[in-house]
Amino acid sequence: MAEQQGQSPQNWFERHPKQTILGLVLILMLAATYGAEKLLAQINRTQNLVLFSERRYINLREILPGVDTVDVPPDRAVRDSDGLVQKPYRVRTDAHGFMLPYSRYEKPDLTLVFLGGSTVACIYVEEENRFPYLVGNLLAQQTGKKITSINSGVGGNNSLHSLDILLNKILPLRPDVVIMMHNINDLVALIYDRTYWSKNPTRAAIVNFSFYKNLIGWKAISTLARDMYIPNLHAATRILSHKIFGKKVKEPDDEFAHIRGKKLTVDSAAILDEFKMNLNTFINICRARRITPVLMTQFNRYKPNPDPKVLKATQGFESDSGISVSEFIDLYARFNQAIREVGKDNGVLVIDLAALIPQDQQYIYDVVHLNTRGSQLAAQLISERLQPLVAR
Image: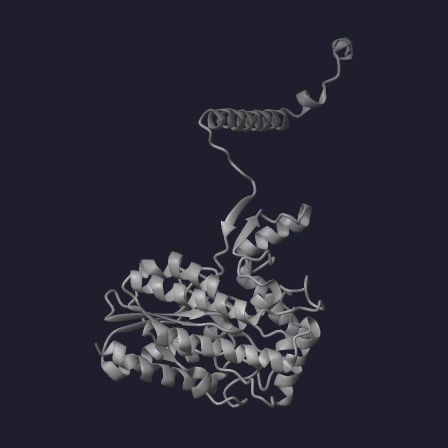
């Protein structure tokens, strides 16, 4: 008893030997990691190698590779449309970010690629009725050849974004024909920003990138985990929440919020020239790589006396920019005419969908987006005009 009384009491470390050992191991690991980082930093400095936490990148605007998700039209898109159904539309991509489905062959007889914005992507049409996919099927039936027809459309893209995709994603495929359709995204971007090389937060040609730069703490961790590990579950949860609780589908970010409401002036000759230069660049790149370029004008409902839905949409743009309805419709028509002229000057096939697809709600659900019937008609018209190229 006396000996026990004479002993000094055990401290925390003696009472918890396992936790003490674990703590020492963690400290050693952290010290080793810190030491390795400092050593590598010193080595990199001696070799003039600098690592940056923020970098500048070419803005390759694409649908993420390898996704299988759904997209639900936001409330505003449904409200401003004629007959667009607010339901989940399946969106799938392959390992390169090209939309599925498409007929895949180890050695196709002909490969077609479609370039453009949302009017090519046709997100709010069931995937088996999107015209780039249908064109391949129709041409295969008409010619008996193995045709691969790839949809590389991305919502919001203008012709500069498509040139980036052409250079970095499409050329390695060695396609036979590339078909490009642009108009409204170029027109709006050039009206608002006056250049393709703007500082627009989502459409700039070059972006400064940092992982979740504006997020801190738990928000940063949860967002990173969501986007990396459960993007499809997140989308499905949003849709289920909308169905059960009637929550609104989130509106997409407004890329031009920084300039809306300001009175704008438009140098129509200058922006038309910019657009034509991009069209010519597309043609020249294709020909330099032994690819047949094809241009398409953009179907639309911009008539001299537009129907109420179209008029309302165009009046909204007028209030945002100060550009009158008649001036905008005229500029849009001149952009389509520029496509015809550039095609003629270069001896390039132009598929004049603006003239071929009726300007009404039977085929186009808002101002420039095809519904299922319109997509099927576009596929028929495009395949008929491509058939001579395929038959060579």
